[in-house]
Image (cartoon, rainbow, N blue to C red; front, side, top):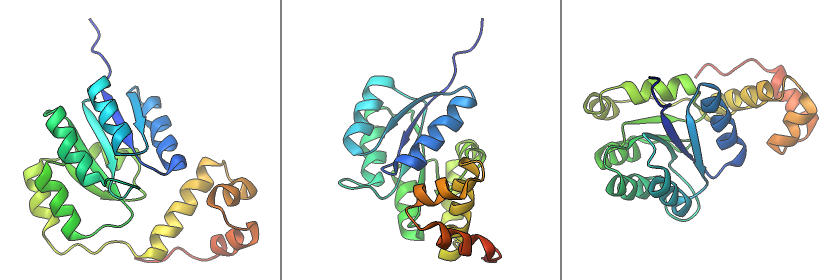
Length: 181
């Protein structure tokens, strides 16, 4: 008898990033549901009862913290990893206290997310209170641009269109060396 695939809910208001994660998890054999806000997330948790959820911290309306609190109230065994482009020790600590299994800065890839699900949340909570230096804005931007470029198979024009910047601006950014931190 074969084991049923694990299910995961991706909650993010950024369509492009959410769709990229949905495709990546589907390729790995997960049953994937998606939502772009708090209301959709809770509806998907009620309907699909996923085993895991990846939740963006900052969304229009109610935040990822509220998704954690109310999602776990609906489905207590749900494992949640929070992703955010606006990370801080305070919000990470709040997320862990509410029951999140992990907390990662954006952009994160599927391997990082899966590793966060396998960590012991008690250890993660202790680690989050230590002095963590987040990547610089320049480094985060550089990584995001390169991931989008990769998703576009190296097509500069398509990448610029998806990022909402001029093609020449993108080419200038790509010609620079990656920021160290």
